Image 1 (tube, one colour):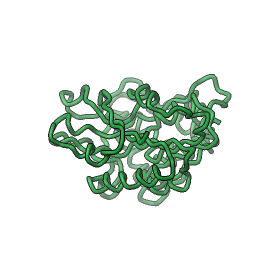
Image 2 (spheres, rainbow, N blue to C red; image 1 turned 90 degrees about the vertical axis):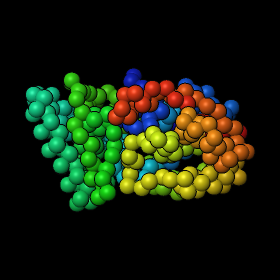
Image 3 (spheres, helix red, strand yellow; image 1 turned 60 degrees about the vertical axis):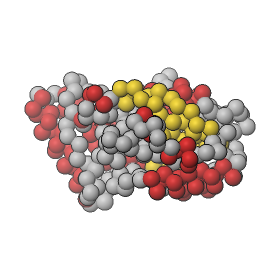
Image 4 (tube, one colour; image 1 turned 180 degrees about the vertical axis):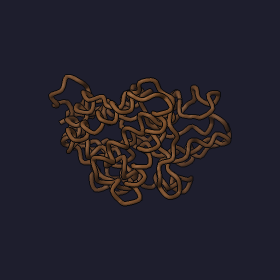
Length: 304
C-alpha cells in the first residue's frame, strides 16, 4: 500500500504546521518497533496535523491498513479532497497562485484578506468541511499566512494575518499529485482520537502527537481548534494509551518536556511511570519571539 504510487516524487507534507515533526522524523522513525512493516501491518495516527510522520511511513512501508484522523474538520477535508478530487483542487490552486504572484506586495495583502474572508464565509455557512474550494483556500492561506499558523477565534474563524513572503510556493503540483496517490487507500476521518480505538489491535503501531502541554511561562501558539487540551485532557489521553496498550498495540507519544523550564515538573514522569521516556532535541520555529525559538528537548514516550 505505502510505496506503490506511480509518481517519481515522494509525497511530502503540503502544509507548514505548528508542532510539525519534520525535524524529528529520524528520531521518531528510529523508535519504531521491530517488525513494523512485517508483523506490525497497521498504522494509526489520530492527531495527524501536517502529516510529516505519516508521509515518512507511506514512503517507506508497505502496510495493510492506515488510519488517520484529526478534530480539525477543515484539515481533514483538505486530505480527503487531495485524495478524491486532486485535478479540481490543483486547477483552483494554480489560479490562486497565478493571481497572487502577479500582484504587488500591497495588492497581495488585499488578495490574502479577501481569500481569508471567503474561507471564513465557507466556515460560517457550513461548507468548509466538505468542499474542494475550502481545501484550496486552506492550502492557499497556509502557504501565505504568517508563519504557517492555523489559528481560529472563538467563533471558529481563521484569523492569522498575512505573511511576508517572496514568491511563496502555493501549488506544488507534483507533490500534491504524489500525496493524492499516497493517500488513495488511507482511511481519513474527522474524529476525536478516542474514535480510533476500533482500528487498533496487536498488529498496530499508533503514533500520537497531541497538542503539547504548554511550558510554564512559554505558553505556545493558540491551539489550532476551538478546544484547549489541558492537563485533564493529557490524563484522559494517558488512559486511552493504557486501554490500547492492553489490546497489544505499539504506542509512541510525542509531547513537550516540562523540565526545559522547570526541573521539578514531573508531570509526564508520573503519568507514564511504566513507560519508556526519552528526550529528543527539536528546533521550534513557530514562535512570534525569535529569542524563544531555538533548540529545546521534547519527549518520546513508548509502551515497549
